[in-house]
Length: 140
Image (cartoon, rainbow, N blue to C red):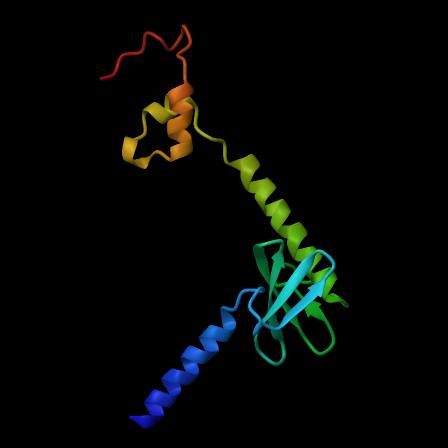
């Protein structure tokens, strides 16, 4: 019973350390140009959450001989290089996702169940004015 209690306490303490934000005075933070690295756990590799401004963009890893970011197979000499590589990857991923996902037209939104519409889609429908070609459509 005592060992279980101690293990539970150790687990809770380790989880608390992992989830510390960069503003916490107990967080181990490294500031590099444009980024903050917050130590999460590990010895080799050491794992750091990478923040750009107030947003976490991902994690990077510190090995004895190099850094890596987990999204490519490159080895970086400096943590800033691993963070920039991660940041660039995330930017490309967002752009790629944005260009491949076309938002539905207003006519397509009219076919979606109203519970499934987002607030942005509702706003689009409020501003929607039917064209002469779609004005004569009749709901079934």
